[in-house]
Image 1 (cartoon, each protein chain N blue to C red):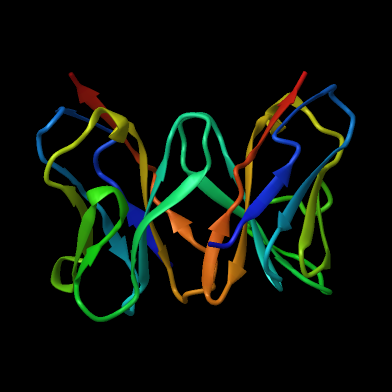
Image 2 (cartoon, rainbow over the protein chains, first blue to last red):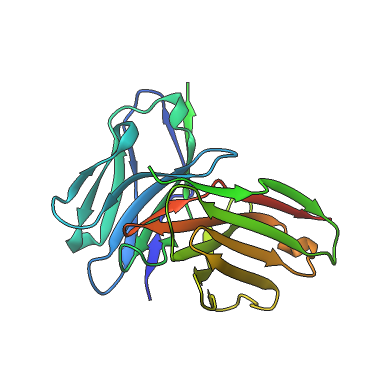
Length: 113
Length: 113
């Protein structure tokens, strides 16, 4: 069965600092991978996705993620965070592009001024 | 981009009553929609896959007689929570598939008194 692990429940970084959110997945083949952000009181917004090709994926809001097959990881990065980046971040996996999505438990990002 | 709406955005009901939540794809047709629920500070859990013109497919542990799903048209899926109780209080989110990608609605906050 597919699963997604986000080992960090909370992450706190200072504004302007770099960020890396970890995500590991369990799946027999190469899955479709996603990162979503959920701000308080708002819906899910897709940050980026990996289906195939270049393993370094660029997303919106200055985020990027790197797919590493050998480590079964898809970590999210941003070189310099802004206070508005404070939110809940979900890594997710799907066996196919239009199949049900399995979400990780999420990482809540806190930004220090 | 594709737009998915949900109605209502918030609903409060008494125990024992039924509540209907609508999920609409506004600018595209979706043969498949998904329903998720999210408890406070937790991840999204898939409840069921809604297929237009056929019965929904429920995830293990989800009571199909309690959470009735109807996908009568290519732009509308409804989730009815029957005989609601306080444990059903949650955030319900739908998604619709368009061109092999999922687009999420803004969610419906259900509170059962």
